[in-house]
Length: 297
Image (cartoon, rainbow, N blue to C red):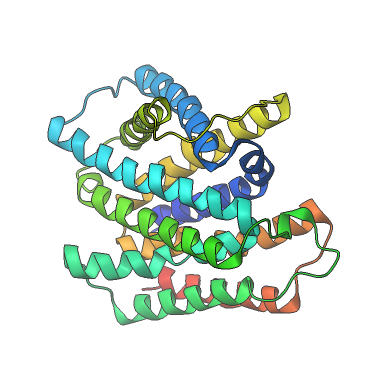
């Protein structure tokens, strides 16, 4: 049996994104989602550039490929990540992660409609079971003495709309990058093109009259948290995600990477010292069963 390295890479992405959701909430609320995303992209662009130069992979297959990756980055990272962090800041990482998980069925539908991808029946069942488990894992009201990471700081409908926009941005960005990644482009180089294009676009917006007001206070803790999310979420997580896209179908990879709301449950328990509900754990077990079906397809 061949080791499913690309599927495991997608699970690694989910773990990175779960950690990012946990450690980003306080920084997002301090800086605002736009400037938080801008700062983290600037940091990870420098890191990716150093990695690419050191590895000698600094050569794109053409300007057309760069344009495709840039468009994928602007849609998936600028729009997708900014909207996702806006949702995290308003409704917390657990709820935002639940809505963001909808990028999996969105990607599967887009892959079928645009790329003509087909999924075997067992894989379709696995995607459905995994998505159901992810949804079940995040249901339920938080307890009255819930940790601040579970708090609502804005209206729930607005948070849901922001989360849906983030999911669509992620699904569309991965779909755009998918054909190019099949050509075997270096994942670090692809990440550099995507993050760099998104960061440059955000910097231009920040300097224009359309840019949101800059935050007044940059504390060392906020900067450390932002840097940590840049390394974990973009440098490691996104590179694993692009590598995963090279070896499996968009819907499967998107589904596996969308299991972060399940992975976040034990992490939340460790962070808040509050045990997730039985319903959440049942959802996690259902999601794991779906992953097994996907691995066996």
